Image (cartoon, rainbow, N blue to C red; front, top):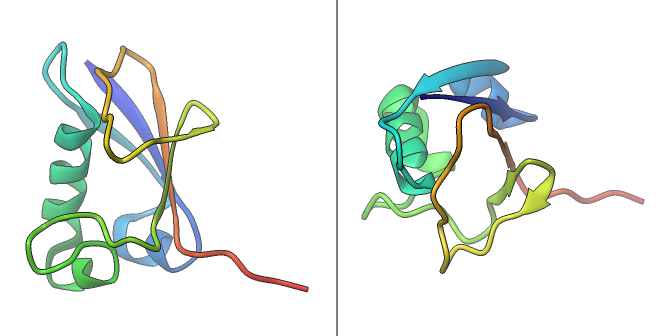
Length: 90
């Protein structure tokens, strides 16, 4: 199944702006994150730590809702995943 991934700010430079990732039916967010880590290559350390886990400051969303990192639910065909660096402003 295909999952759409949108990356923002610095992560867009690393991953690309609008991706479509093929994952097996019944895959969880972990499968998408693994594909993103592969795509990021050597620049992935901005997103992933040395164990391959998503860094604590990274914001992850699925279909417009923030994802609880302790519960990476099963994805469905056509889901949209967004990945953001920390956001600050004034």
